[in-house]
Image (cartoon, helix red, strand yellow):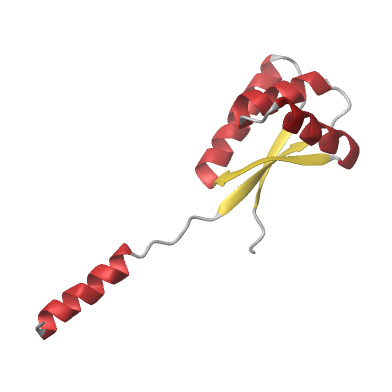
Amino acid sequence: MTRRDADFHTQLQERTTTKRPPLYRVLLLNDDYTPMDFVVYVLMRYFKKSGADAERIMLAVHHEGRGVAGVYTKDVAETKVGQVTALAREEGYPLQVTVEPEPDE
């Protein structure tokens, strides 16, 4: 292998090493007006949660003030926030949905 081939091989390895994108949590926040059934519906429709998981998360929102709906890349998380917020406003609910960075492991 020539020096040029070795340099090309090294550059190729460096380019093909990819870094995972940072992840973000989508959080649902508790309020006194949004019905629990609506929160369960949102979790099942937009976050693909089972009925049992949706109820568990809804109860965390109700009792702890917030619950993690899912963990996604930034673009996906922000899209889900927009979709859920739009539906909540359309239905007349003040449900708040936020995004925060996933803590590093």
